[in-house]
Image 1 (cartoon, helix red, strand yellow):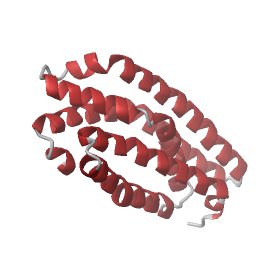
Image 2 (tube, helix red, strand yellow; image 1 turned 120 degrees about the horizontal axis):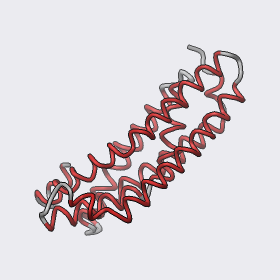
Image 3 (cartoon, one colour; image 1 turned 90 degrees about the horizontal axis):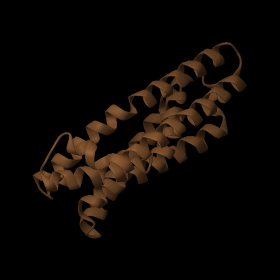
Image 4 (cartoon, helix red, strand yellow; image 1 turned 90 degrees about the vertical axis):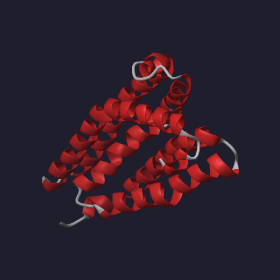
Length: 187
């Protein structure tokens, strides 16, 4: 918000509308991620780490299909969706751009949210904490600032930093998850 505020009230308003729509649209995806965490905990507790891992990949795949569908909707209908909340041309322009750019990362984000929550289900809260800290605080915020100001991308730079960070975090989660150390966490 602070970085966007340098570009005026219409940038902040467009972003706010888009992010609220995004959060509303991904609620079912978070439900799937939480379900995967529960399945991981149950299967690890039952001594079936292979089933725990299989449930994560299966849930992540279905989550990806769901969010791919949402991406198509956001790309096809961003104007009418944002238009439900504003008639201001600049707010509309910023909201549409934000909705479309952020949804580009949904394919990766679908996997990232499921795998990230699965660490929690396994009792490994350290991994998602560290990935989130590095991904958001040490990567996304500086990249958003750099793209917006140093590379003169403006609001597009701020919006672009979101799917870049989310995608890199998802890749990090997947690489760490594949190592399998989460299967041996003792609570």
